[in-house]
Length: 267
Image 1 (tube, one colour):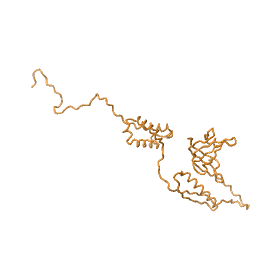
Image 2: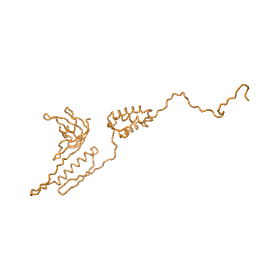
Image 3: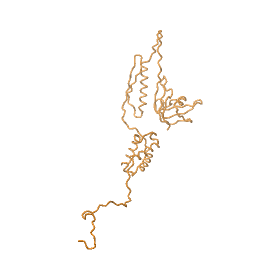
Image 4: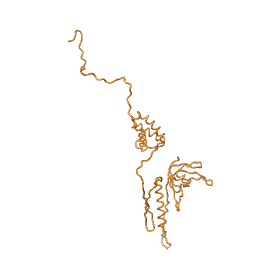
């Protein structure tokens, strides 16, 4: 019974079930931001380009250099990058500091090891064409292209010595044999230095291979090829480190004649 003069108000709440709190609306704790991987990857690519560790046209979505750099940086931290840094900007700054300390650079993955290689050469002879093969085991410190070029040269010399070519025109009144177009032999090697000198008042430029028989004196590149290839030559005389590759023509005595192709850059 309700006392006289008072009204019985319904609350809408069961006495057996307390209301559920909706949370503290006055909390000042910030929500944790989601790690922005797109920003992180773009920032890392920018750093790699700045330090010239990738080409200017490298793609963030498909660059093997980017993937390797991020993987190795992740491994150096011991935990996933998003677990160690609260945001991408901090992770990018940490990556740049890491890359400066470690002197990181991209190394191509090892797909296989070479125990031995077989080089086969086919050349014409008086009795027809002949094929000769040589199987070799490269030394660890010698680059594969250098080994192949040297084996090829030795096979050429052996075939030419064993089967010398003779002219088919015997002077018997028959039609003269057609003049065969001479094929100029070439070799290609990596370049380690460019040497600019002077001989009798004329500038000389020689490219020094990183290995092989001509490492001591190098192979000349003449002004016509320098101009045609737009090859940059330092103005001052001296020896300049160069990372690249050259192709040069060979004389009949199997000695180098002149450089006809070169690519690379000064270090």
